[in-house]
Image 1 (cartoon, helix red, strand yellow):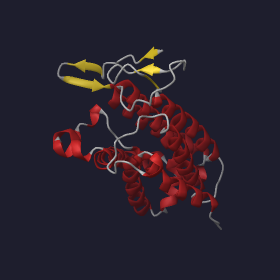
Image 2 (cartoon, one colour):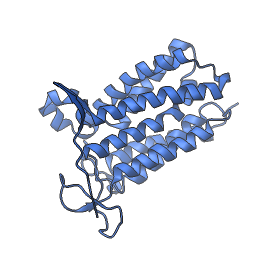
Image 3 (tube, helix red, strand yellow):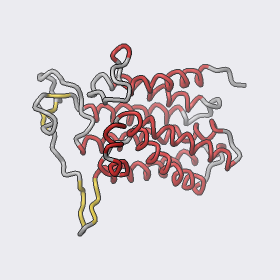
Image 4 (cartoon, helix red, strand yellow):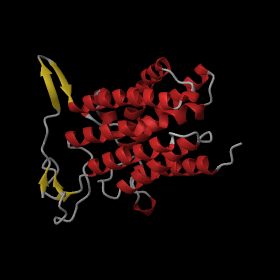
Length: 260
């Protein structure tokens, strides 16, 4: 069995300044957004995007990701803890970001950006969707480095079963890496290739929502479930799985709806 390396969460310390691996993963995610955004704009010039627009969208998108992701973690998963320790709410460098909260934050930013640029919400979302999975991959790697969001108990004979000593000595699924590979690399490859050719409005966004919903829903069977605000949920599904249901429905609708 493998043992989690117990990485030092601080990648580099210069005097009182500490740079954490988790923060570096977000920096890499934002750099990837810029690089992929420019490549996507170059391969699809008819979409009318330029570097200034991509940079502006990233600036406001960062706010949406960080504020929405943190508030989602606080409100969806651990309100009791954070309301008892309010100073921890802003400690994003320690980890604890909700994808679904970040998605809501980004959707608000996209709606505002669409109004600002005179485009439709779906036009903006279709451009952004292929750029997101790479950031999700870096985020999950950050979770793995932090030793958080560990998996459910695994068969000790599983070659990659891993012990997380900070939790217990039970071999577990390294679910962070499953998600980095699924919601990150695999989803990126699918949506990036699909978006390379002209598609009806909303189709790229729909594929992203459906793909993420399916992959995250599946990964939750290997991940130790977060507590969530609702306690026990129907069908023994996790909070994250139920939050994926609207994504699946909207994704299917966007892919199936008739578009002139």
